[in-house]
Picture 1: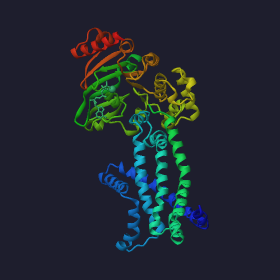
Picture 2 (picture 1 turned 180 degrees about the horizontal axis):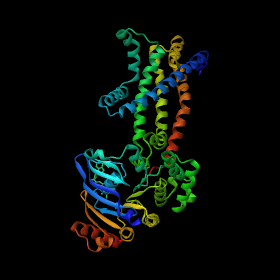
Picture 3 (picture 1 turned 45 degrees about the vertical axis):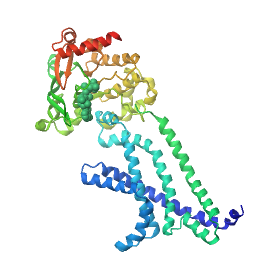
Picture 4 (picture 1 turned 120 degrees about the vertical axis):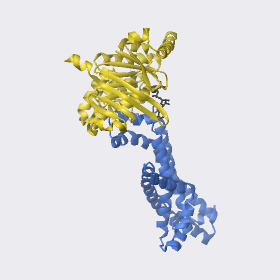
Amino acid sequence: MDGFLKIAPDIPHIAAGAWITLTLTAVAMTIGIVSGLVLVFVRSSRIPILSQAAVGWIEFFLLTPPLIHIIWAYYVLPIVTGWRLDAITVCAIALSASVGAHMAEVFRAGLQSIPKTQHRAAEVLGLSVIDKYRFIILPQTLRVILAPSTNVLVSLLKDTSLAAVIGLGEILHRAEVAASSNFLFLEILTFVAVLYAALNYPLIVLARKLEERSRQGFVSV
Amino acid sequence: MKEDARKKPFVSLRGVHKRFGDLLVLRGVDLQVAQGEVVVLIGRSGSGKSTLLNCVALLEQIEAGTIEVDGAVVGAGPADETALAPKTRRREVAAEIGMVFQSFNLFPHLTVLQNITLAPRRVRGVSSRNAEILALELLDRVGLREKANEYPVKLSGGQQQRVAIARALAMNPKVMLFDEVTSALDPELVGEVLKVMRQLAEEGMTMLVVTHEMRFAREVADRVIFMDQGVIVEDSAPSRIFTNPSTDEAARFLRVLMDAEAVE
Ligand SMILES: Nc1ncnc2c1ncn2[C@@H]1O[C@H](COP(=O)(O)OP(=O)(O)OP(=O)(O)O)[C@@H](O)[C@H]1O
Ligand SMILES: [Mg+2]
């Protein structure tokens, strides 16, 4: 118990890293959602090159770990291109790319879950393509994707800790720095785990609520 | 004058061909339907009945032939494309073809009232107020006014199907297409839907109906059409096709249907 009292002076500094964690999460989620939308749109293109490029991009970021992208962009990119990006930019780009690929999959699954008969019913009433999506397809898709999107958000918040490897001062990096000077690794890392859990808990609760609602909201017949 | 209108074909299909990949589903369908006529389509599963209705509803693009509704060529294969009415006219006519499906297909996230008012508002630019007045009138007609603010999931199959009919009627269609609209219903709910269709027929609606309800065909249809492997093989008055079908296929198919009905 002693150790936990001894880390008290480090807590404010580590907890303040949550701002960077949350900012990075917000930025990557926003860019990820937008790029996910663009990717599904391009993927459904009738021009084969475009749709194949989108598929390739999505698969690459689904199949490879974001840690590799961060390290690659931070250490390798400057050698190859001569550009040096600062740590937070590198993390924002790498995590956005990963979130974009995951969100593209969420959107695609959501759109595909709407039965073809809903499209036909809308078309036969004479609705334009835009109106069909705006009033019939997208509102139903939104309900379906809310829960999986929140899950992506929860993973993202945890993945921001990868930024520690390139020395970005978010929660984990600050914790590592503190621990390496007072050697209270167990206590400090336990505190960090609790902090992540506290940040994520409301999101998990939200995801469960949304899932519940989309299950009982309506059964599509 | 009225006689003339009745004789002129209102829906007219000539040499309609439709394929899905290698499968030729419609192989030259010719069909003329006069205004106010009720035509029942029967035929084995896979004979192309749904495909035919989907082509008339412009949900499918045809490969050859022409489809005309109220004097406008709305569908044509590449070879007959020059006959096509201008796009805006085609879209207008398309909105005037109502279709009801086996699986109801109400919009689950919208109330009954919203299901009915959406298309008149968005496609025809009717004001919300007027669209609602019209929708409530239609709900009265199908006996569901008290369900206006319910979501579809709260309705029985028969009620959902009646809402689907009201939704199609809200576009003031010139033709109504019904694709096995009672097949997914529990037997005790079939009657309420057929009653609405009967009433529509009596009011003079032009109707193309795919159904296995032989009583409905006998009592309501002006003509019964038997389809086999993508072509129309028999087209006669119900009194004739039921007593004295001219093809063996039709005779065999009808015998099976009648036996099934007798068992029920
Ligand atoms: N979108 C599609 N893609 C590929 N094949 C299709 C498609 N729609 C229908 N078919 C095929 O076309 C043929 C005719 O189908 P259709 O649904 O028109 O038959 P049907 O007479 O309505 O049969 P049922 O009585 O079972 O409803 C079938 O062999 C079917 O498998
Ligand atoms: Mg069918």
